[in-house]
Length: 172
Image (cartoon, rainbow, N blue to C red; front, side, top):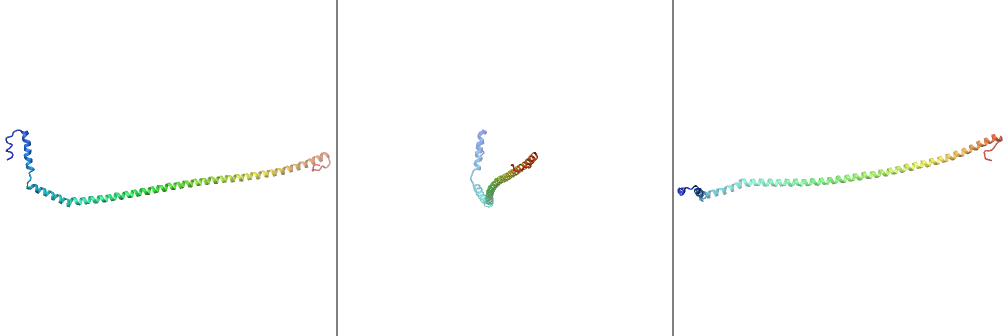
């Protein structure tokens, strides 16, 4: 029936748009089947939401919540680990500082002990040198007296032999 209208038109450029309009008009016509399809789609959406999408969304929401909780826990653990690491490094720096201070104090103490020992050795050496000088001076004085006495005795002996009379060693 609709095709009869187009029977008299022979130009293909004009027939194609008219044919499309006629066919489109039949597809877009609203009748009882449209209302059935529309209600069926709404019912299908409702059923799918209740049976499929809502449980899937609940599972996804719980998964996201658990994941967010785990991520939060992981972040908390990471922050706690970093805090422990900072404390450990701080304690390590303090321990190293104390160790260096102890080493430096031991070095200073060893240097002072060395200086004391050197001073003691110098004092002992100086005392021994002074004692040796005194002993040498004493022995030199004794040797000098002995030599003088011997020289007088020899002089007296030589004088007695030359003079042929006894001469006293006293130096008369």
